[in-house]
Length: 190
Image 1 (cartoon, rainbow, N blue to C red):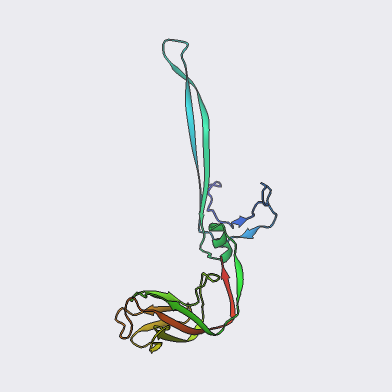
Image 2 (cartoon, one colour):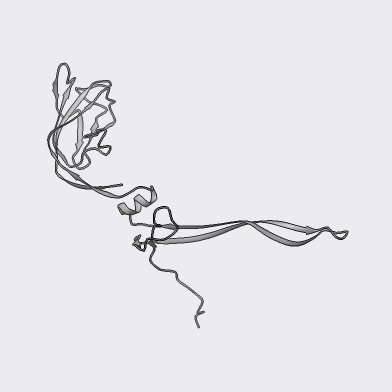
């Protein structure tokens, strides 16, 4: 006969944030996704007290002075909202206007490194879904076109350009200007 106290733990984890500046929950629980692991632990610090009324000290009490409780869990659902909770940020969806003729200039390149197209002070993520990527060497001087073949490779989905270590027409320290088209759309960011 099976012991009725045996438990094969399964369940769903939900998160309900406190209202700002309070310890009151909002009432808006969010399912965190599949959680294959959950564990809790407790660490208690105690101070022992001894009676000295007689010849031999006798421990008469053990007083708890600190009790640390912790809960940990693993999620395999990498939703933007979960990442935002982890990094204490906010998840949002940004509109991407897209368009042609966008540029990124890189001074003092290093061969064997990557360049993220579209990085600006207002766009720390850069551009995604790019096409029609062209490159010019020394854009303030010679303005020489650089062919991708033998010099760089473009990952159009991420908007990253890999500068080949064995580049034929560019060298460490050169200044490059990339011109590209970015597709319109949206992206989720934290």
